[in-house]
Length: 185
Ligand SMILES: [Zn+2]
Image (cartoon, rainbow, N blue to C red; front, side, top):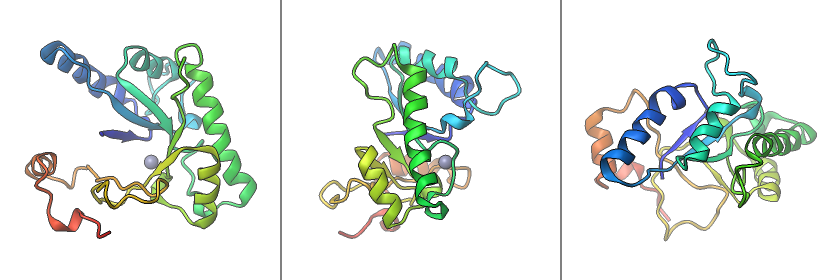
């Protein structure tokens, strides 16, 4: 599973064209997961915004390229928030994402899963996320091992950023990930 956090505009300008190209070349769709903060969604497709607008999100979703999930309303560190603000971040994000995709999301798949902003969580955060979402994802540079996975609210993800070389990425994609990425059961 490939996921993209924070809903940057580049998802629409760089990633979506690649997904269209893949479909044309290989005759099948590649779907990516987007963890979005609806508080950052621009209402009109403003050219200056670094973030996606609802209309842009809808295009990729309608075409079947996006699996849209929640990353909290405003990308707050949830572990630092009082309870009422935490709940608000979780619920408002879900409501707003579903509002944006309402007519397109017949099976209600949008905003059913969560990714902790900054990967930050504690007991309280985990408890409330588990009340409103089916699973939650970390940002911890660990590879998912299904036989180890007991807690659906602590699903590991590998980190991909500019610090990782192309060679490393290819190795990871081929399953040749070094030991440090593998979590012990
Ligand atoms: Zn984030």
